[in-house]
Image: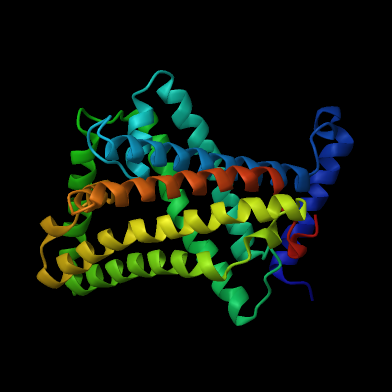
Length: 300
């Protein structure tokens, strides 16, 4: 007997076919597999734009051209108050939503054909957590269409993080929940660093061997930079949990600001900023060359 998921797929396919037969307008709509590929490529492009923007802003802060260092969310706040800011937020939110949809297909329907081996399941689980983080970022972009950032977005980001930490601390065993949250952030950072050295990023690209060899370092540098950026924030969240003090929590941008105040911190921040730029550039490479295959289970 077919599974409920198979019955649902069959029902949707029949509805789509009936609609195409009855409507000339629907017959002009590209097949679903082409729409999914377009959405995935737009998603990679949106991710690239966000990281490229964040990297440039961190770089400008490190060389003291602008004020406070910003994180990923801070980059959205900065873009939201620029000319055509609402349009930027709408396009970024839409692109990130498409990327979340692609992450869902990778995680649930195994769009990358990773399988159910230990490595495959770990990869799909990582893609699932990535989808959740980009869903939150997409929501933040759309929220900026309604509520523009205040005069000091950096301070608002820190305050927002502390309010969230206080909410967690108010729960039963809240201090340990906060510690676990910090360890998850640390694991995300460490995972990115490990992935930078172990992953063959070119196996997902449909480009010439020469081109793949040239762009692979961008992915490695970008993942190392992303991983290292999370570590200071993770440490502060763990300390906040151990001390049961929400005031110890900060935002990603403020954590990077703390790194900048250390000896040679500006150079470390510049290196991190260039890593973010590299990750953004590689995301654009993926938007162009990544293999986007329809999941087997969807049979599109």
